[in-house]
Image 1 (cartoon, rainbow, N blue to C red):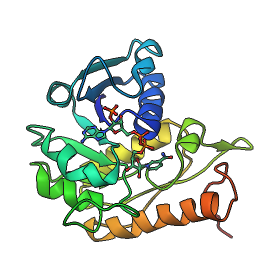
Image 2: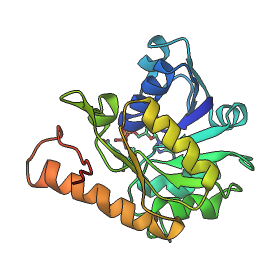
Image 3: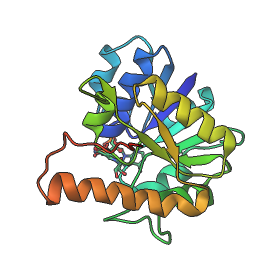
Length: 205
Ligand SMILES: NC(=O)c1ccc[n+]([C@@H]2O[C@H](COP(=O)([O-])OP(=O)(O)OC[C@H]3O[C@@H](n4cnc5c(N)ncnc54)[C@H](OP(=O)(O)O)[C@@H]3O)[C@@H](O)[C@H]2O)c1
């Protein structure tokens, strides 16, 4: 798959490595090609290259957005033409919201010309994306969004990198709920001091 990643820090950089490990072509979309967080990703894999944002987007079928939530409007506007492309939103507007919106996925939908926006990879820390295995068992990932194509791609990517099951929260009306799930993880890991090596998994009888 050809995947552009906008925002190349903790979460974007970790996803870049994991996708490159699975032989996807990863185009980092950056504002300054000579100075961006995650420049060391270029020496990690031949599958990772850096480009200005619109160039990375034009080369890709799937676009991952991983910038601080308050910049979601700006990042979505900077993509250029994304008609027919799938956008995976990893962001959480739980502390700083994008101006005018309750969650980052709604901000993306309003500021670009793709309707295939899904939220995924937002409910856990980047360390769990780097390694989703606990005692040899994969932890779970969660999605929300009304785009069937988007959900299929997000589910495939999450499973490829080691998440065991991918549970769907529902359509676009569940974007905010999925951000609240991320806030639950943040609350336990950071505020309640359980540490970042904790993860959610659904168990059944
Ligand atoms: N950290 C986690 O464990 C985690 C987990 C789940 C979800 N998330 C979500 O992921 C998002 C990113 O978090 P992070 O911890 O990865 O942040 P981070 O390490 O601070 O990286 C932020 C990245 O965003 C880029 N950026 C900032 N404003 C931009 C803009 N207007 N246009 C394009 N790129 C822009 C920065 O670019 P430069 O390189 O140019 O500085 C940098 O590469 C947040 O919304 C957060 O809620 C984070």
